[in-house]
Image (cartoon, rainbow, N blue to C red; front, side, top):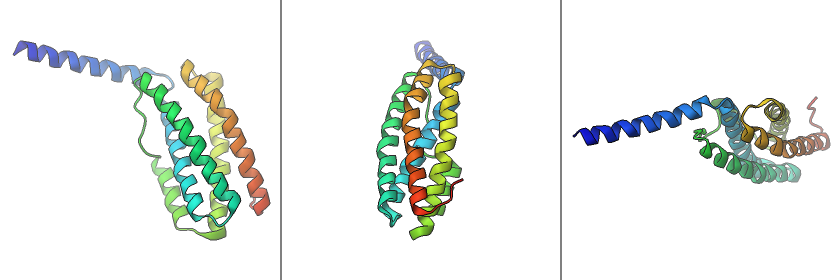
Length: 170
């Protein structure tokens, strides 16, 4: 019986230590927010492919699915190595945005999606620049720095789409 108790205690301590390591990671919040944002971009990109009447918006949505899925996969590998548990879905606010977009169609969908993508990418770029320059976790900093050029390219592309569609994103 004492061997069973000792084994259970050892497993409990090992689990507690791994959770403590993850919680002690100074950049765990960045990992979690990046995961939520990436999943949201994929979900909304799929929605754009299905609902938009505009080829350029559909293409942008496809690019979001491809690029953010790849970034999400890289993030998952890094987080797993550090015992950081990532969320499995976008945030509540991001889910609400998706629900709002699901209720729209045609030009109103495009306008709302385009504005949202500009705002999201502006925010993401700020967060990733901060992490790349000020983060404490070397892997998080490297991930942020490596992902920044893609985020900037997305922002440039969606701004061009906004301009072509007459959507004010200033």
